[in-house]
Image 1 (tube, rainbow, N blue to C red):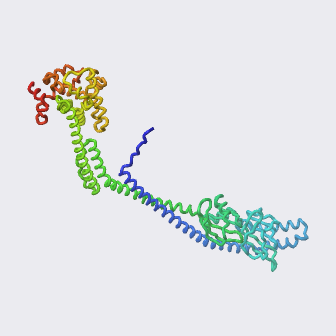
Image 2 (image 1 turned 30 degrees about the horizontal axis):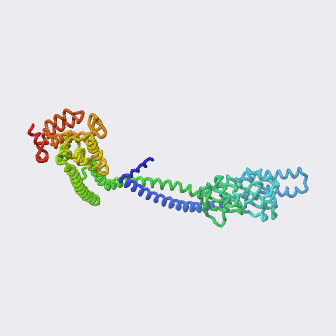
Length: 570
């Protein structure tokens, strides 16, 4: 089962910067939203106002144009030749021969053509009093063939502007009666096709888009096919001259310009398109404002983040260095940059002072317990009294001579004190026997390193001393116990304690033998170097002994008789 990866939290400076940027971003977003809504509302009002103005202008222009066209049509209707030719054709067509009738009609057509050349209408037609076309001329004349009827024909034959359906097209028609004396013999019709061209003219005049609608059918428009389809489906009410509608996914303003019968002429303007330009300009201005705001936010955020985080970083770095150097008792000085951090620093100093005091008390209790245990073991045999203390002192001297670190020295000191803790399980009759041990008794002695290791494993804070206790009787040649380790497989601390243990044993008296002189003990250690004892540890002991024996302030002469003997031998 894989261990889940611990997420590394972001640094405080990054969180401060991110918070500042998000705040600025939210403010700019809110400004943009409000600005967009405001611009859109203003554009809608502006477009509607422009269309209303366009409607007024267009109405005036269109009214004058239609008046001019009516005046022109009225003038053309007074053409005597046209009226005379038409009257003769009407009178003679009923009983005349076909050839004569055709000639008379050709005369009417010629006159119609002459008149059509003088006007700009799409079609000029002569109709009888029933509204049927007699002759026609102009660009759209083929769409007004002879005999076709205008829907619906007018009865009064007064000059009027109306919409008429002729063939497949719808036309805006100005109709003027043709009178001969007091009788109306027909009418002159000026027609303008309501097609895309007319819609484009409307769009130019309204400065937008245009549409011509008859009974919800779009006759002509400048809109796109999609917008045209949506416009036809709206069923716009004639009672609402100005409306806002949705066409092809955009918002449009619709203004009715004028109406002729059931034909309506509409001006349209896209609110979205109009708003796009103004919104772009507003966004450009907002972008500069935002850039300035962000620049100020960066500077302010960096300053604020540094003001907040620099003291914290300094405190964090001091704690990291303290932890790396393991100088937890060192006092941290307040930075003076933040009251809260200074309070935190003082609280930490007080806490560490309490921890240091607790550790010192625990260490003193710990050392006292270890020493008491070692003294209790030594007290079982009056000949080995003080043995553990002397081995500990010798081991520390050897370790310092071998330049071991402070932590290793402390481990060596306590491990040497406890090196024989396993003898607690050896019977007194074996441990205090005054003569030589039998093989069976020696085997029972050999179990004390393993027994001592088992005892220490139940005490977690003594775990680092277990190798010394368990392996201090191993030999470089592999003939030691309990595992028969060789050379560098044996920990350095265990090798040192082995040398110190042997030296103290040889220089201490027993019931069955006298103590040896230090020089003799050293000679024995050197003789067995690299086989029974570690040679480096032996030479370190030899080098350390003169200084060790000459330091009465740290050694008890009564407890270390061999030191005085060593000094005398020297």
